[in-house]
Image 1: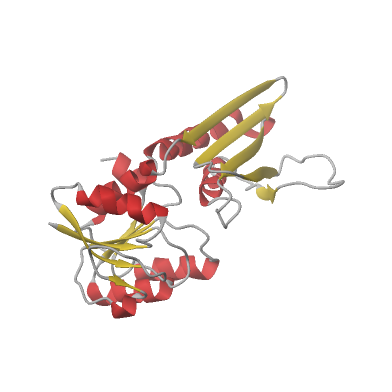
Image 2: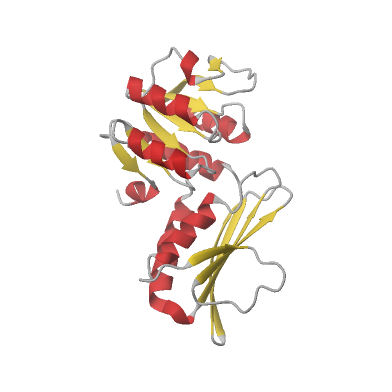
Amino acid sequence: MIDVIIRGIGGHMGRNVLELVENEEDMRCVAGVDIRPVKADVPVYASFTDVREKADVVIDFSSADGLEDELSWAERTGCALVLASTGYSEADLRRIDRCANTVAVFKTANLSVGVNILQALVRQAAAALGEQFDIEIVEKHHHFKKDAPSGTALMLAESANEAFAEKKHYVCGREGMVGARTQSEIGIHAVRGGTIVGEHEVIFAGEDEIVTLSHSARSKRVFAAGAVRAARFVCGKPAGKYDMHDVIAR
C-alpha cells in the first residue's frame, strides 16, 4: 500500500487528487497539509512540522510558501515528493536540488502527458526550423492563477532554446515603442480570464509560413491523474530528481 500525504488538500487540485487516490486499490491518503481549515476524513495539519503520520510520498499542489518545512520534513523522514506547484524562486529551486540529494523528488511544471509530448515536439521543431523562424508562446489560464508566465510556458521556452548555441532571451509581453523584433528573443504572453484550465500555443513564424503547436487541457483532472501516476512512479526510487519524461520513457 502506498501512503500519500496531500499538500493543499483543501484546494481544487488537492480535492481532485484525493478523489483519485481514494479510487486506487493500492494507494491511500493518510493525511493532508493546508494552511486553511479543511474538513476531511484524514487528519489535516497547517504545517509539516505538525505531521505525525508516516508516508511514502507527498503530492504537493499548493504554492512555494512553506516549502522549507516540507523539504526538511521529507529529508528527516525519507519521504518521496511530487512537486506540482509553480512560482518557485531561484533560491527555492536550489533548495529543491539539495533536497534531491537525500530523497526522490519528482518535479515538473506540468503533469499532463500531452504537454510533455508537446515539449518534445517543440524541441524538435526549433532544431529543424532554426533561426529563420521567430518563436512566440501564448499561455492562457483562469483568473485565479497567481504567477505569470506559467511554469509550463517557461518549460516550453527552455525546450525551444535547447536548439540554439546562442541562447535566446525571454520577452514577457510587449508594450509601447519596443522596436522591431530581434532573432535573439522568444516572446511569452500570458492571458488570464474566466475558468480557462490551461492552454499553451507555441508559434514558429517564418517567411510566408507559420507552424503552430498547441495543447489544451479541458479539465484539471488531467493534472491530478498525472500526479497520481508520478507518485506511483517515484515511490521507492533512489534520491534524485525525476520528471514526466522519466515516466513517459518507461
